[in-house]
Amino acid sequence: MLCPDTSTYAGVTVGITSYQPFFTFTTPIEFTPGGSITFEMEVLFLDPTCAIQLANLELSSLIELTFIPSDINQSSDSSNIITNPLPQGNLCDMTDLCITTIQTNPDPLAEINWNEEVTFVTTICNMGPEDAYMRFFLQNLT
Image (cartoon, rainbow, N blue to C red; front, top):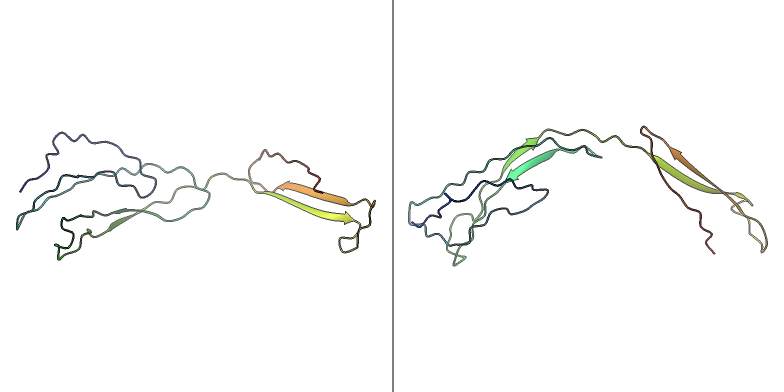
């Protein structure tokens, strides 16, 4: 069996934020009957940054094989999936800004005439718990 020489492959830290292949061996390997190959992968769980919504996180590991020709394998071309639940992080400190606009004059259900003044009142609020800096602009839509 012609196994790949991995003695020169240096361990490299790879940050994965979503599904991302990080190792591909493109040279075909001939497996004679009874042959096998073993992969070992170490994963370091780093402290998470804060989140705006807590959710259960998990790490899944899967190995897939490609055969030439593609229809020669009687077993599955994918390994079983191993899933590790991860501890939840912390919620980020956040704020809750609100904005509302109402028409106060004339009555919003009344007809508006030409040259009639219309009054709008806009309220912006911070319902906390954190301070927030915000900007707003007024625009006359005609």
